[in-house]
Image 1: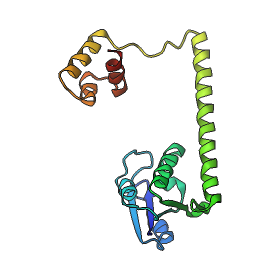
Image 2: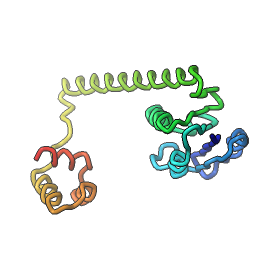
Image 3: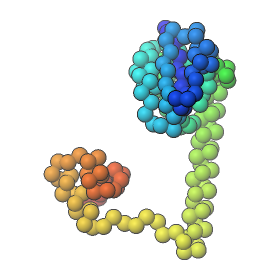
Image 4: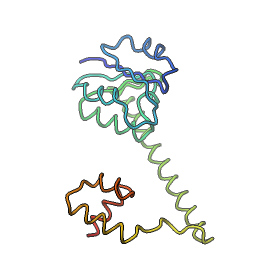
Length: 180
């Protein structure tokens, strides 16, 4: 049952010192100098793989751990599945306690609400643009590209490689494959 710390700064010009000072009670600290916007943070991935049932992950602030609320909730769910608790020092959150779990649940509810509001505003904006004739959606992929995608897939090329070769998104490749 180890106490594992995670510290991150966004740029190499920033210092980890203040976080490391707060995390000195931890048995091991994973340190990262990566932007929070980057999906790939090797030390975060290593730390998530490292922790075991009964361990506690400690961070100084939520923004040091996750890119956004959705990412935070994914991390928390992953930690829960591994039997690992989370402590956020500046908020006094400890998921071992009912109050700590409640706080994170509330954060999740707010995130869900924010997402619904965003989708609602987006739909309203699209409706207004359509009524003014300014929204036409995405241009369809040419039949030539569709045929190339199908042929490459049939030849055993990976969907990711096909996406790069043809110059379309991976989602579009999957859509073409599904449509037959």
